[in-house]
Length: 230
Image 1 (cartoon, rainbow, N blue to C red):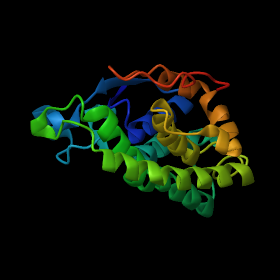
Image 2: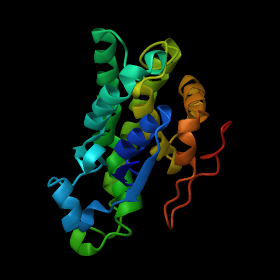
Image 3: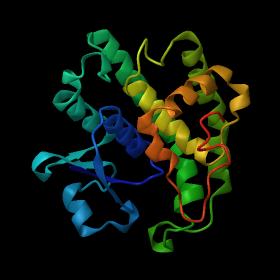
Image 4: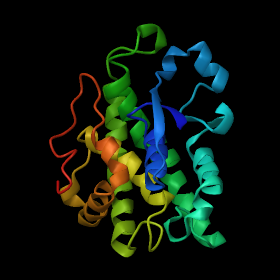
């Protein structure tokens, strides 16, 4: 069994878990607190970032999209219609674009800041940057949510799945990011009907079940978080 160093509230880590789940691959999970900068952890990735996959031979594969490419090359090419990439180059380019949108752009504008301020800082030591949440950072992140939800709503309303006619890495990246915000109660789904219908379909997939069981100590999810019908 492969091993994933992760944090349950990092969208990049959730994305990798969803991808392996879609392919029916089990992962041994090790929850990592990257701010602790453990020597063993930095030996795997000197950058001190997550996720890290210990692949065959315990070789570390670092980064969400790097892991996704590795997964596609070692498993996905054998899955045919269940492959999480498209078969054609332009289809793959669109999947990569949207995956980057949710795991990089949305993360840098919204998700990362809300997780840091609301989830991490209360449990981090002051020497590592912990302390009281920064209300200005929270307000700025919340101000950006609406545009990302409007874009997701447009994609979901004009395509069967976000990047085309089947589930791909793009859907998993978006679902990973939005599931973190949903856990925190930061999304008003009533304003985005198409995105809500798409998210309900993704949330109902077997690969998503482990994420619905995730809990953060001292911070319970919103009441509808694990409800497949909201």
